[in-house]
Length: 172
Image 1 (cartoon, one colour):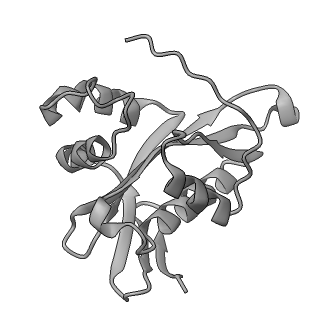
Image 2 (cartoon, one colour):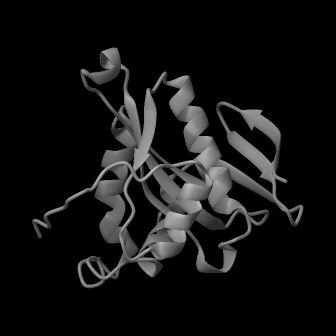
């Protein structure tokens, strides 16, 4: 059973996992970028395999734009040593449906391969859902590449319904 041990709005959240080693969730800083890029590129699906940069510094401008956007944030899950073991992005989308309440879209959820199955993903999703509730979002939505059967099982286990069929068109 996972249990929240400390919540601090400014600094993030620390939670104990099954193996009693705490994980800390906090907003990502530029100092985390190298590890974030390594985690997301290690989990790249077929459509992204040859479209990413080898040099993590090439992501600096995109990272800065993301952290400066008022409707979006990027978070990291850190282990006891301060190493990035997971990351996710959250975007708040405005619309007319649900009387104008925002939707929270969770994007680019990645857990370092040696940490999968340890509770890191659940901790990050719980954190994202808490942020969505605080923003009065009407729902949390996400997409998952159809190649990721393990992720689909994970999201269903967390109570997510596969309610829509999504489409993407690559422009690069």
